[in-house]
Length: 578
Image (cartoon, rainbow, N blue to C red; front, side, top):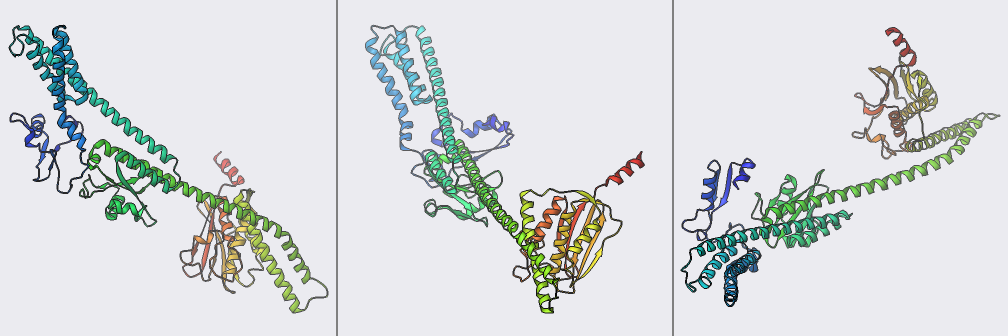
């Protein structure tokens, strides 16, 4: 104890007081021995309460006696081992007396030493010492002349007695030590086997119910205890996996919740509420706590043994890792299902949009031809033809968005990056949306001295078309739409703003998700893919797009693109440096 305290830099020891009936008048107590060996270490000796003595062990009133505290067989074995050692010496003496006339006394000494060894193997160190003393006395009384007397006729027999006693004590000590080491090795092997079994069983568990069943069976088999797993819900509140187990263990949810929140054990054998009959061990996994293990042993002293408690903590760690693995298995399965569903949906949309694109293109062409037929159509007929043409173009745009989204997500779109002036792309986008913006006021603020930008012109034009179309759909006629661009440091910023109703609060990021619209229920045509395509195209250019409400009202969509150094500018810079 002193060596352990000094190796671990401990300055205080707390021990229980020795029972008075175990000490001889000349024998020092454990506290006195420790005080003499380590005067520099503080020693706290705990007194005994009246009426709580059981089998020489002190118990606090908060630990009620349990029928399984110590088995009756073990107590009887401890009490009778000295009696069995005495009977063994008597039996060997009686068996050796007829042999004394035929064998030398050295052979009789060997028989007594063999008896001491056998007693040490079977009954331990104390019984072996008693057997050694009794063997010397028996040999002196029955086999050394004058017989049946402790008188010694020859001084050399005194040396024989001393050697016999020393050999018996040393042999008994060594044999008892080996017996103890064998018992310790057996316990270690048993603990290692228990760990192997639970680790093997938990490795094949893929559901929480399987982990619970394996855990209960392993703890019952190893610790002879009842166990329950308390797992948290989405709000972090613990609940027992089996209600009947909660009744059998008298599980206190409050103590279990404290152990889960603090990440520390509580209940029996701990510093937190030690009066509880149940031990609560948090299940700490590598990422987070996965629950609490509640254990109630029938022999509660078993959980106070450091090796057994360490084994229980190892069980808890294995259970926590198994629960975390099962959790991520479920997460992976859900993700796989979502991915497969998304893939099937994209395949279906791509097939439908590809098949609808050709008839829609024909429908747009027929509507345009209808407006140009001779003789000219009446005003009502012309209005109907133009409406057919506008709706066909809008449907063609929706189908193109579906097809583009499917291509982008499948990775089939490859960027055709070229150094382009932004104003040309802006002009193409305004021409494509001229019909959509005819009832709005459009302002363009694009400086002529903007640097060239390395982009895929067709895809960036699609981004501008979608943003302008989005602004025209969600603002009333007569609203102002502003398209502006500027170079900021090494970024080109392009924004499309309006003075309409703006975006719903809290949905500035959600509008970029697939099939999500600014207004959940609206008569405005669209399927909610335009902004999703914009984000995919901008991010493929290593840019970023965000949405926000303007301070004066309305919405603003801004995307940025990285500015590089055009080839001509790079050559001029090299020439200047040269």
